Length: 456
Image (tube, rainbow, N blue to C red):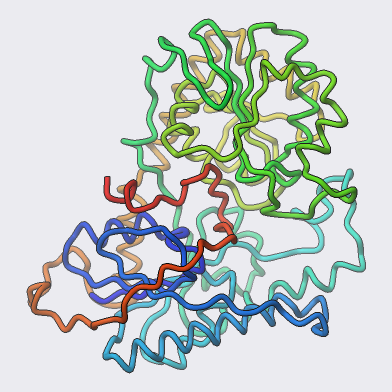
């Protein structure tokens, strides 16, 4: 089959399915994206130029749609060039979040399209207004509602949609849910797995060395910001460090903004929170290494004695899935996205998003109660094996593709690969890396794997 994928930050959520398709050796895979350095051998990237910024004259509520339509124009032109070169895909798969796919039915009206539907925005009852420390501004509600314009256009293109969790599906209106398939995402359980030997040797991350006798608490977010509970975690540290002198803490994440807004007083959320609670934080026991290589991130999860995952009612991060697969004893916020993954006392603990003492107490329980720690580790891995299998995910994904195209992916093609009508595309452009991160919560630097990792 011929596949066309679309995501402004290749490979985005499509790493595993594209790698799976490449491994079969039976498919032609083209990927339209903004230029970035990521590569997967066997996938042909076709870049489009990032549209210019939206003019300030555009109404603030309409700017996201304006930018989305500019992206749609750019991708339409790129796709039209592919068609002129003789390329017609059997299916188009992409992320609907940025509007890139909105005009593709005009290029290939008879080609089935499968769009990733990540989140439906609400001015109430989800992320907006959830945190009383950052109350919602009613003047911003029109902009939040208007963020769904791309959602609505995408839902009415006649294609299919999919989303990775029940909670994300529940954010969509009743009339839309029937058009969206629940496709539960998996984890590479052979890569993300426990390693009992990880506690037998020192581990160095950033400027910190974790000795076998140290208790390690870990926290991961693509960026250190309120959406992922960073202020709560920072306010928890003085209580935790005061109670246990053997605790060391690694706070992985960048200083940018993935979701929400920057601090009103400028600077970064890390600097803001250090001004508030820094006097109670021993810099020798807490390290902020920024975004770390994927191998370092996995080594940290395997060594972790207690892993904290916090989030607003929003899209759950890949790091939560990978922490469970690595057998981490996870302490999560009692918010709906986390509740879908963690059953309190079985494969993790749930704690208040707003109470630093409650979080500190839960972390201490996991550090001090050996039986609890062991039970949560086993429960986390068992849950991952039962619910997060990559094989199960890919089987469901390929079954959905088969249903949409009528072409079973597990059957050999009649025409050998080298004899197929493979379109000859222009030379690849090696432009600068996109600054926009994928919106599903990839967290550590290199989490969107480059060619070296994808080839493994």
